[in-house]
Amino acid sequence: MRTVVDGVRSWRHDLGGCLHSCFATLLDFHGLPALPILGAAWTFRHRPDGVRREEYYYPCPPETSLLRALAPHHEVASTWHEPAGAEAGWAEVRASVAAGIPVAVAVDNYHLPFRPAYHDVHSNHLVVVHGFDDEAGTVRVLDAVPPAFHGDITLAELTASRDSGNEVVHDRDMFFTGVRIDNRWLSVELPAPDAVPALDRAEVARVLDLNLRHFAEPATGDGGYTGLAGMREFFDDTVKRLSAGEDIRDELFVAAGAVLVGTAVHADWLAEAARTAGLPSLAERAREVERIAHHWSAVRIMAALTSTGLSAPRLAGRFDALLNDQERALLALDRERAQL
Amino acid sequence: MSSPLAVDLDPYADNTGITTADRKDAGGFNIWGNTYPADQLPAAGPVRVDDIPFRFPPAAPGRPDNVRCAGQLIEVPAGRYDWIQLLAAAERRTEDPLWLHYADGGVDPEWLRVSDFWPETAAHFGETAAYRCTHLHYPRHVDRKFGPSIWRQRVPVPRDAALRAVRLPDNPAIHIFAMTLVPAAGQEHR
Image 1 (cartoon, each protein chain N blue to C red):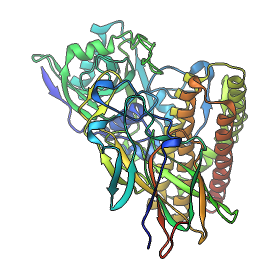
Image 2 (cartoon, each protein chain N blue to C red):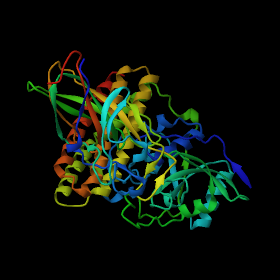
Image 3 (cartoon, chains in turn brown, green):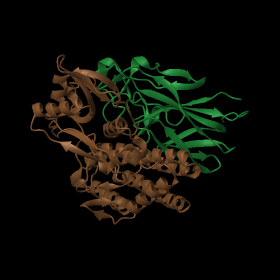
Image 4 (cartoon, rainbow over the protein chains, first blue to last red):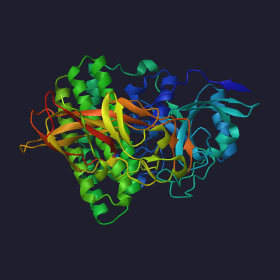
């Protein structure tokens, strides 16, 4: 059998990664607007014991799926499938694609010939699969993360990447290594396109209200840090841990990457809402939120450099600036909401 | 109008972002150890980008060729300038104020915004691409599918007063390869 599911398009955010790219592609395939759904929520959640060494890590509240964690303001969800092995893993993905439904699969870049990491470093990544040719032994893969790839690889290559142990072999196997891929794959549960609210003033008011409520939540909950108060506590605790000589590099790097993309995509949502709802002042709020994403770009690199001596006072200085801007942005969004 | 003045950043350089194909591991622009291929960038010395003169840094194995921003105070020849022109790139786009120190004691923040060096990524802040490479160095291989960029960005010097120093932000995601001061119309640097 040979099939390629059409209507699978690439989506990329320059501050994001494979997680948002894959979900956006799947949303788009099902006729749903990616940015209005993926960008609506703006949250801060961190569980030190919940960070996973995956490029597609995103903090999930208990009993909350990955897609739901990204887009809690919409009736969406995802399911991680954990096949018994490589054979079952391909059978399940093949069945979905044969039924006309593309899926996202976890892979180790080490085994993918189109990735720069090919036969160099291991890294836990996510790509979309939407076709196969049984006779040729190939699969159709979409990866929006540069170098963008949309084409066929052999099933053997895909299987190797999915069944990989993702081992830490040398010092360049950083951050996203050491967690088995285990042939996992993601399916999504989505509403009908006409059930998604239009991006109008009412939707802006609804979303701003939900986000502001989130940031007003108590600092701790679900065993982690939540909201604005949680962000403040997390920053304080992280600086203390670094000052005490604790290795915070990987945890902060992976966590910062997730907050970075969440913040950046929300900034784009605000900018899009400003255009569609005719709210010029909201475009200014979008830029303020984008500024916070740019703080997180700095935090991410600072985190990585803690292992080579970046000091706690430098990290604390960045956290202070970020928190000040975060507080100002939330106050401005609150004023914006009051005028809607 | 007097000529633009290329600032010597060599004393401040602390990151090796450019390597040769035979010594790809002798640097690390980003935290992953990627570097720009030397054979796709200018040799050390004067270059012009968008008709603005810069001094491109020397590249040699392990030799720092760019400044990773960490709050360095860069003294400049005192003078009235309109623009600080930069060749820069970032590890993911980012922005921060740099501090302009004037000879009369005045100090102002001005935004420095730098886009991602990563291949297949467009300028976000309206910079022009000074250099676009076609391949990217990894410590153990060369990837010829894509290449990184260096951007030309500029920062205004609004005060009609002599500038004497620039404080870079403490943001290690931002790297600066070259800096040129463009004098205010009719002004000489002194």
